[in-house]
Length: 242
Image (cartoon, rainbow, N blue to C red; front, side, top):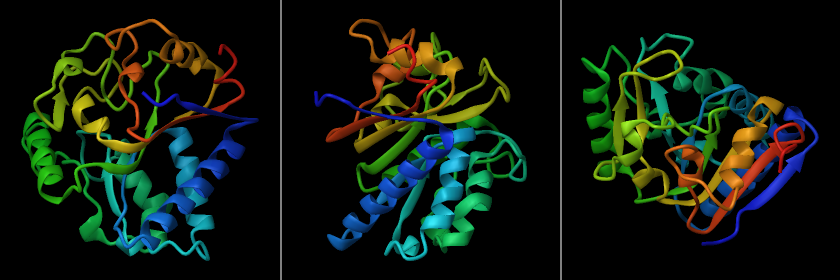
């Protein structure tokens, strides 16, 4: 396994700028190779900051967002106009502004699209198999204070699902209870995995995920790594227990 890279920045704002700049550089390089990049997005406060930086920095970056395929690591199974939707936040923060092609933005199901989260997960599984490239060029993931990643929570049955791309959660320990999430099987099909973590309340989870011993059933973030690159982008409070 390739050793992970650790990038520690002073605060969340500096972290967001650094990640946005690096993502734009990576997307530009992939497009220069003649490929259509496929990326996986996450939600959360730090993701929102990064998305806003992407909207600010994309003009002049050389990235053609109409030729970027967008996926999500997880989503809340709620109404399409709910503020809890990761996809809604990303559209408002940057996807609409940068000219992303709606046909290449693959959102997970909302309550308007599927009768329940299980059906929504099955639909996303099919979408990834039909329209995915077999791997993400860059997958961005947040980490919760409990060490969860995407919607793979400690001690949950989803941690052992290895025969599908996406699965469902009916009893999330944090609201809303119903969610759709990619599995470890899918998350680990990534050239690059970038963990984005800000805040001292997550320092313990970062330390547990980076420790030499431990299990994914206690700290799910331990279970994801990029095939070519794994980077932990941390602000100083999040890195304080390393």
